[in-house]
Length: 171
Image (cartoon, rainbow, N blue to C red; front, side):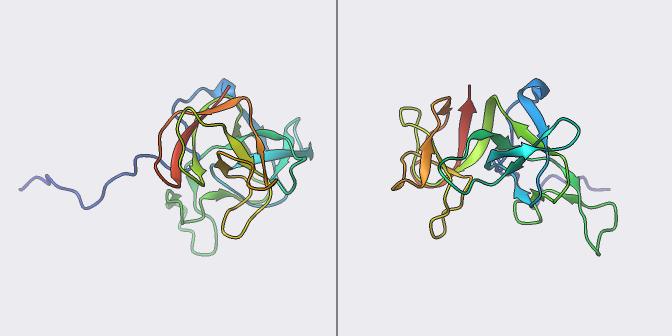
């Protein structure tokens, strides 16, 4: 019997919301009244349940960043759910649904979407107001005409020459 030696797929270098270490003490649990994608910065939105905060996608530059949503492998949901499928891709419902516990990274490294080229010498800004195709909760290196706020306790850990996934450290 022949042995398979090649495979028709390759894993991504990283995915939005992927952490570099499983330091559970650097994460908190939260809840939301709206669906929230993996790998975006979230703001405090009041008391949640079970002593966990409620979080939201930012809507104004007065919002306060509490962390970044972590990518998790979770069971698929919906009418076609066979209870064996796992959500694994960034396009297949890769988000937390309403009422699901949300894992939020508050310290440490996590992969995020950088709207522009980044490197460790540049400042980190968090987009709070959607601007055309640029979505609230993502990150960049400037205020984008008062649509993003500085995150002084964050730094870029990777180099990108254009928009794309970038490693960000919260400290």
